[in-house]
Image 1 (cartoon, each protein chain N blue to C red):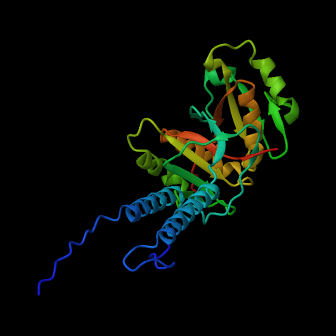
Image 2: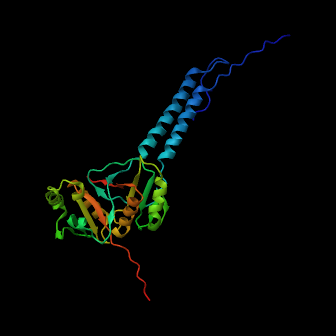
Image 3: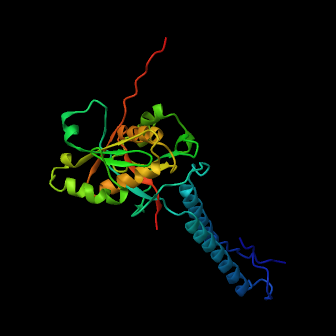
Length: 148
Length: 132
């Protein structure tokens, strides 16, 4: 912050006006500079909202059997067991979901192997959402097995 | 000999007060924006058509070494659902949970996290980098 107003020549007892105003302006400019630096340095996070209704266990229900299943591995993607390249996934799913109007019918069960990287998963689920599918994760149930 | 007593006028320093107020505003803005998970080393996955994420109370991060953090503090996946539910509390308006997951994290780590957030009633938002 700028200090008191002492610079400039003026009569004794009267404040040198121009110096005082300059000090205030310097203060303000400095504050504004800090303000814009702060605003520029904190960029907001960008991302994608995703509705994940619930996870289903391995014990498949009757409804789950009717739903589409997308299996993801580190390098491949399969829709209902048929391998599909990522570029064709959206169009393939759109075709399969076209006749399904109810939200519960548009559920796409996503099953990924343990070594599937997050970047691959994000790419695939993005395509599913663009095709109008609702994502549900299928997780493998963890079982503790005692070894004697 | 009589001296005239001069009245000293001492008005409040309004200009200085405005400066202080402005500085305080700046201070609180910086404090509010500064996140406590800056130390976590991670790289976001890339995706097209990202949107600006809402402000969220809860941030779950996974770093390069697959360590899981809740609002900057390391946590085990088993406790995650419970802790996320505590952080979210009874707030029904904003239940956003930001997921900052390193791009190479494996499904064995990130899927249980998503399940935990879902169990806690959070709305998942993946923090990603815009692909150009």
